[in-house]
Length: 84
Image: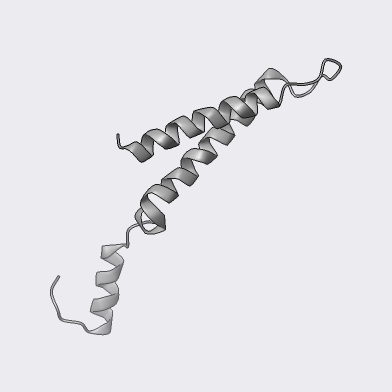
């Protein structure tokens, strides 16, 4: 685990904890429930991890790899004879 990954993990845990603590209902309020607060915290932590993944490896590192089989079919249909 590199330093950036550790930073993202700590930041996501801290964000989840802060969201959970900041969504405490007032004494007279009945919402949000404990389950809702936990789900808010988990979604916030997952958002931090997703943003950290994009920031750490860049958009190019996260995008889907090209489909090589489709590329070969298109090349053969266009008459390219170069072997792969």
